[in-house]
Image (cartoon, rainbow, N blue to C red; front, side, top):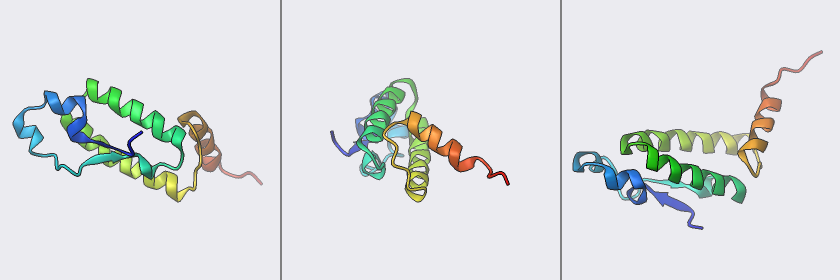
Length: 100
């Protein structure tokens, strides 16, 4: 599996008009190497590929920024989940207040 999925390779890029395509640099991508496990990488690749068939290029450009923030949060929290289902449980435990 490639570690990066470039916006220019997404389904929505092919459907976009030239004006929208000019907003995309060749280097803009979803970098799955930012995720800590192969399981999360695989899930996100599948989600992004599917999402690009449903959404416009402008939406995917915005979601790339959100994806990068998510990756930083996972790294900062040192989360090692292999799936989003595991991650949801981890985040619940992190956000629960401790009781005396």
